[in-house]
Image 1 (tube, helix red, strand yellow):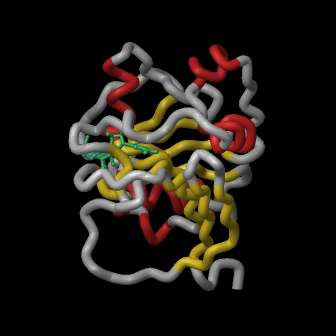
Image 2: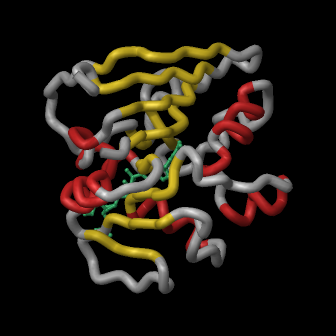
Image 3: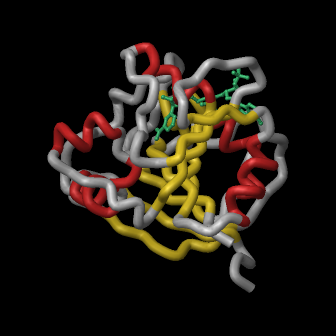
Length: 192
Ligand SMILES: NC(=O)c1ccc[n+]([C@@H]2O[C@H](COP(=O)([O-])OP(=O)(O)OC[C@H]3O[C@@H](n4cnc5c(N)ncnc54)[C@H](OP(=O)(O)O)[C@@H]3O)[C@@H](O)[C@H]2O)c1
C-alpha cells in the first residue's frame, strides 16, 4: 500500500491560511526553504519549478489530492493544471469542468483507498482544511511546516470534523534559524 501524506504549512494556532484564504503571513524566505525546494520538489507547482530551475522527480509523490478551494486560486490566475508533473485529483461535489488529465472525485475517501492500493509513489494530500478533515482517517503521515506565527483566525488544518482524538507518533523534527519547524508524524500503530 502506498502512503498518504498531508504535507502542509500551518501557523502555531493550526491555521493553513488567513480568513480570506491567503498565506502571505507565512515567511517564504529562510533556511527552511532549501528543504522545501529540494526535498519536497514534487510539491512545487510546475510553473514555479521552471522559474526556479528545478525538476520534480516524482520520487516522493506522484499523485496530489486537493479540495476545490485549493485548486481555484491557481485557476483564477489562469493556471488550470498546477501540478502537471503529478496525477491530479480534485475533490468536489459539483459538476466541474477540468482539463484532460485531471480528475474530479465526489468521494475522496473511496478514491484515496483505490489509489493507495495501486502501485506507485506517495500520495500527497495538499489540503485544504475541509478536504483534509474529510479524509483524515486515510492519512498515514503528517508533515507540518509550522510557521512561527499566530494568525488568530483562518482556515483550520482540519475542517468540518467532530471532536474525536486521533494519536500520531512524532517521527521527525527539524528546527530552522527562520523559526520554522518541520515536524513529521505517523499515524500511531501505522506499520504494526
Ligand atoms: N498552507 C498550506 O500549505 C495550504 C495548502 C492547501 C490549501 N491552503 C489554503 O486552504 C484554503 C482552502 O481550504 P478549504 O478548507 O477552504 O477548502 P478545500 O478543502 O481546499 O476545498 C473545499 C472544497 O473541496 C470539496 N470537498 C472537500 N471535501 C470533500 C468531500 N469529502 N467530498 C467531495 N468534495 C469535497 C468541496 O468542493 P465543492 O464545494 O466544489 O463541492 C469543498 O467545498 C485556500 O485558501 C488555500 O490557499 C493552504
